[in-house]
Every structure is written in structure tokens, then in C-alpha cells.
Amino acid sequence: ILSLFLFLCSREHSLDAKKAAPQGFIMNKNKRGEERELYSLDVGDSTFTVLKCYQNLRPIGSGAQGIVCSAYDHNLERNVAIKKLSRPFQNQTHAKRAYRELVLMKCVNHKNIIGLINVFSPQKSLEEFADVYIVMELMDANLCQVIQMELDHERLSYLLYQMLCGIKHLHAAGIIHRDLKPSNIVVKSDCTLKILDFGLARTAATGLLMTPYVVTRYYRAPEVILGMGYQANVDIWSVGCILAEMIRHKILFPGRDYIDQWNKVIEQLGTPPQEFLLKLNQSVRTYVENRPRYAGYSFDKLFPDVLFPADSEHNKLKASQARDLLSKMLVIDSSKRISVDEALKHPYINVWYDPAEVEAPPPKITDKQLDEREHTVEEWKG
Image (cartoon, rainbow, N blue to C red; front, side, top):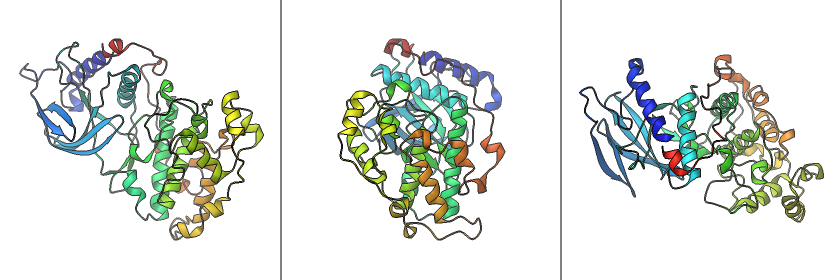
């Protein structure tokens, strides 16, 4: 499936000269009919084998999904980011995630979602096919670096507005992210923001009683932690956690695992009422009901005025509005949590409201069974 996807991408790019994208896909040829030249270099603990048009590779980040380098693209005469997917065929989950990410990047077209420039593999045959490289727009930093800065209300609210626009665009295509975090949100020095990653495929979500695995789970909503059903505003919880971190300059719920994560949530926000606990499956409810009960703290105590920047005269943005938005986002019971549309109309956000950005045409996802697809690793490969 993946090799076919790469091949179709290469056909599309070669037929559509207007895109002026480099032609470096698997088994793709250049103008003289020769295979494009590749070269290899070591980047940290990994070897990158890339097309010769990509030069000056520098590592800029790494995570569970792979290593990312900046590079200069001599075809496009601009800097780009190249992500080498980490062993995409080691198991079905990795293969599915690689396919999902590529399909969504190709279909989505919004200023607050990262754009796909190219995708290629250095291998020449299906038997050898092992590596996938994704070439994307290059941004200046991820949100982890921005969180350490002292931002005024304009920048805070504008970054949140852009996150919400990007999320709304994904939701319009039926894509619920569920794994938004500062490391997969990138920004430029002019304060423009893009979402980098498309989150968990449905089959990859794990809950409280599942074996923990090494991922950043600090921003995951209670309904994901507790293995419940979820709706679109699952992503609002993550945005609330990110806003809280930008204000506090430290992680709001730094759980070591899902159980510790849940404890951190209820210690600060309080144990949810019985009506919420009745929504949990029996084994999870038994665990949650046996935890000590916490009253939690008011949002005035959790986020006192002293943590916020000075009130803004220009847009009349102030700490009380940011705190009110936080109190509506960080609600354990998703049925009582603010929606994406409501958040975009909140006084702290709506100063930036532009219908062209908020109501952009939804992406057309070509693979309607994207999240339901189940294949063997070999089938994903082909």
C-alpha cells in the first residue's frame, strides 16, 4: 500500500509541472530517464540516504516517529525539513501510522497544518523497501521552545487561535487528533503556527489499564487516559494543557504513566462527580473510585494573576479572559467541555477571527477507511 502510494505521488508530481516539486519518489526518474542520485550521511545515531538535491542536512529534532533534519532543497531553492520515519515496517501499528500520516498530509491544505513537499524511498524494489522520507515545510522552532518565553496576551491568544483553526480544519475531515503536544506544533519567528503531526490512529490509543509505552502523555484528555469514547473536543483538553504550560512555564500534569497522570489531574481539578464515574467501564471505575477523593483548586488559585502578562490595552485582552478560557477547556467531563467552535468565539480568541481561516473548505480524504484499515506488515509495504 505504501509503495503504491509513493509511486502514485511520483506520477502525480511528474504530470503536474505547476507544483514544481522535486521528483524523488521511489523508482522515479529524472529528465534524462536516469534514476536520481542518492547519497548517505550519518545524522546522530541514524543514517540518512537522500536525494542529491537535498544538501546541508542538520538534525533539528527526534521522537518516537523518527528523526527530522533541516536541509537546503536545490530544486526549490529553499530550506525544507526532512523526516525519516523510524522503522515504518517494524509492526502493523507503525506501518498504519506511516500510511495515515502520508495520506492526511497529502489531502490537507490549510495554513495552520504543515504542508507535504515530497516523499521518497531510497530503495529500488519492493523486496528492499524499508525507509520512508517525508519532505515538509521548514519552520523555526517547535512550541517547546516558545513555552519558555515570556509572551504577551497578543501572542498567546494568536498562537491559540491558529491551533484552533488547524484543529477545526482536521475535524471538518473527520480527523480527531488526540495527541496534540508542544513538540508537534511548530512556529515561525513571525508567530505563524502549524500542526505537524496527525495524532493517534484509532487503533494506537491505549488507556489506563493497558501496558504503558514510552510516549508523551501529559496532554492527553481524561477520556483517552480512561479508555472512554471521545468526541471532537478531546483536542480542546490538549490545547488547555498547552496554554496552561505557556502561562506556568512548566507541565501542568506531568504523569509518569497513565495512572500517575490521572492522579495529577484529580489532585488539581478535583475528583469528578459520580455521574461521570458511571460512564467508565467497570474495571476502570473500580480503580478510579478507590483513589483518594480530592476537592481540587479553583482556577484563581491554579492560575493567579501574577503568572499572566500585563493586560493588553490594544486588544483588551486580560488575565481574567485567559483564565476563563482555561476553566472551560480543562473540564474532565468532555460533555461539559467547550467545543472548538465555542473556543474560537471566546473573547480571548475571537479578536483574530477570520472566516477564510476558520471556515476554510474541508480537506477531501481520499481513503474513507483510513482508520479502519487493518493489514499485515507486508500488505502495508506493498
